[in-house]
Each structure stands twice: as structure tokens, then as C-alpha cells.
Image 1 (spheres, rainbow, N blue to C red):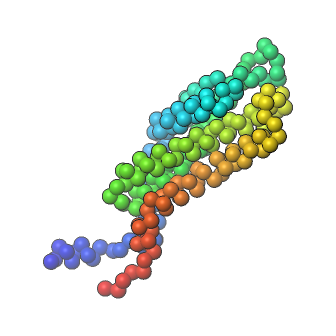
Image 2: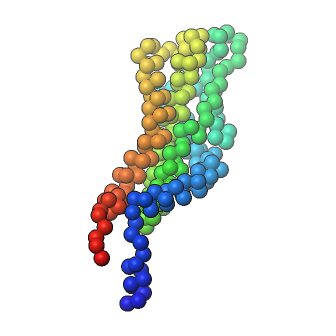
Length: 202
């Protein structure tokens, strides 16, 4: 009975206590993400290669990964000169993957028994979001901000360039921060309901 009383006396989880847990996990998650990023981002690069081969074969010859940077090698020629070197575009993948440590900190702070499964599933869902952002960044660079000489070689018309700008803004401003939060809420509905439930008097 004494052991049970001690266990029952543990302080209940509140929103403030959960927030402190998240804040404690954030530095750990970000450090782990930063150093493991080349490995964690490799599947996103593989996905980008598949999408580029299927949908943008005329614009992308290859995609190389060096650490956290994806380099798009294109057949485009700066200035349109036939003898000029081909254009390459570097994309910093860290800009589109910081949702990974955010999701990890939220998941670990919740202390669910199935946290390993949640982390794996969250990672699998967030990888396409990273690929989206990086691909949209590349397309924006060659079709919009690269200048008329490069944009004219892409073959994109006005409405396609507008769609690329929208895809870039969505991938850079919305997905990295919002997707991990929405995903975590969807996975932890019962935990959130218990967290919001008023504390019962002893």
C-alpha cells in the first residue's frame, strides 16, 4: 500500500510541465539532427532523384548530396551560350528539415510507450515534405530567380512559374514548421485530451 501511495503521489502532467519537457528535449533533438543530418536526409535525396527523373528529366541530369547540401546538375547553360558550362544549383536541405527535431522533441516529451513507432512513422511522413521544399527551391532558382536567359531554357510558361513560386512558399514557410505539429497532434489525440482534462480533486 505504501508503494502504491508513493506512485499515486507523483505530480500530474500539466500543460506547463509538458512545455518544460519539450523545451528540455529541443536542444538534444536539434544537436542530434544537425550531426545526423547527412544520413537522415539521404532518403529525401533519393526521393528527389526519383521525382526529378519522372517529372523533370529535361531539367535535371543528376542530384548529388554533399553533407546537408543537394546539388542539382542541369543541362541549362548560363547566358544561353552553347559552349558555356552547365548550371548547377545548390540547395541547403537543413532549411527544409528542421521539422524533424521539432517532431522528435514533441514525441519524446509525451513519453508514449510507442514513441519509437511514432518517431519512425513521423520521419517517413516528413521525408516527402523535405523533398518537396528542396525541389521547389531548385525549380524557383531556374525558372524564376535565375534570370531571363536561364528561365527561357526551362520552357515554363507564366502560370507554371506562378505555381512554382506557390510551391516554394508552401515548402519553405508552411511545411517545415506546420507539418510536424499537425502530425504530432494527429498521433497523440488521447494524450492531448488527457492533458486538457481538468484535474480531479483528491
